[in-house]
Amino acid sequence: MPELPEVEAARRAIEENCLGKKIKRAIIANDSKVIEGVSSVDFESALLGKTIVSAHRKGKNLWLHLDSPPFPSFQFGMAGAIYIKGVAVTKYKRSAVKDNDEWPSKYSKFFVELDDGLELSFTDKRRFARVRLLKDSYISGIGNWIADEVLYQARIHPLQICSSLSKENCATLHNCIKEVIEKAVEVGADSSQFPSNWIFHSREKKPGKAFVDGKKIDFINAGGRTSAYVPELQKLSGTVATKAAGKPRKQASKKKGGDEAEDNDDDEDGVGDEPTNEEEESTKITKPKKGGNPRGRGRKPPMKRKAKESDDDDDDDDSGGNNDGSSEEDDEDLTEKDRKVKTNTSNKQVKTVKTSKRPVSSQDGKKPKRASS
Image 1 (cartoon, one colour):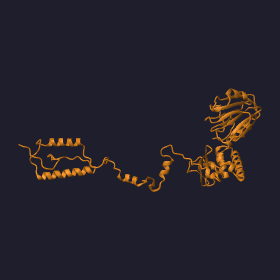
Image 2 (cartoon, rainbow, N blue to C red):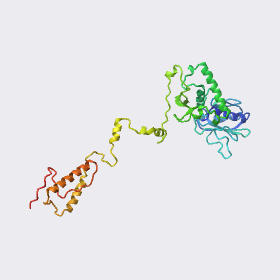
Image 3 (cartoon, rainbow, N blue to C red):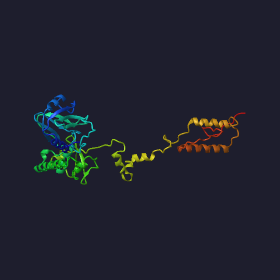
Image 4 (tube, rainbow, N blue to C red):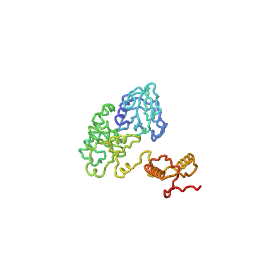
């Protein structure tokens, strides 16, 4: 995202290459979301024949001072950028337009050609920028990451109310604003050259993994935006401390196996997998094993299968009916087999049991009566 240093780099590039030159051609995009409050035709008419006298910046806003008002103003938004054909503007974006690049870009919102042939374009791919025609300048913000950095350097909590700051706090805050901005501008907005002890380098990391100088960085919502700060160093003071309490920013993992899953894997000795109460422990113990009977004990073999087995037995019986040659020994063997069948089914082990060819009464266990001859 372009912040104050990137905007300043663009301002300097315009100042070094465009001052004193007249606008001979202008193309303004027909995009009412970015081009605010004026039609593209009226905007173009207001620029033609004007000379660029100077380039100014206030906060994150840049404007061109022409030899007569109104003046074009640029609020860079999330992806706004200034390109000057043949000129390296800033390392934040590709430094210069190449001969084989589309020019002007299809994302160009403001394009002018100067009387010496130099061409300038303001582009915005995401359409969060604002390009306006203004008669005068206005107050603007300082930028998100710079606000975080300044407050960290000044040891001021993001939720601290301005009216509660002491004169010493205000003086410290003012000095930190100057120091942070001057350093960022000095290195041309090249973040790799920012001091290593800046919170800037860790403010984009996830909660729990963001540190600066070994101290933890937390994230809260302040003024409708996410603010990074160090609780150990930036503390709320006065009555504000009891009234304003920021809630930690939560970043739930959207993908399966994200950070939350990683955190669970860090549990030592499998603590995270243990039941949390006696009920869960009981459930864990009594859970049926794979392949077991899920409906409880004592389930009888299917009737169809039993009937089929009986039919098969009848087919093997040469007598075709009841046999009159039964004995007490046969009865004892039959009773023992029947007991084994019941025991096996109660242990959830359903087996194919071959029944005796001589059926036994299911009522009292007595021998069946002999068929009359």
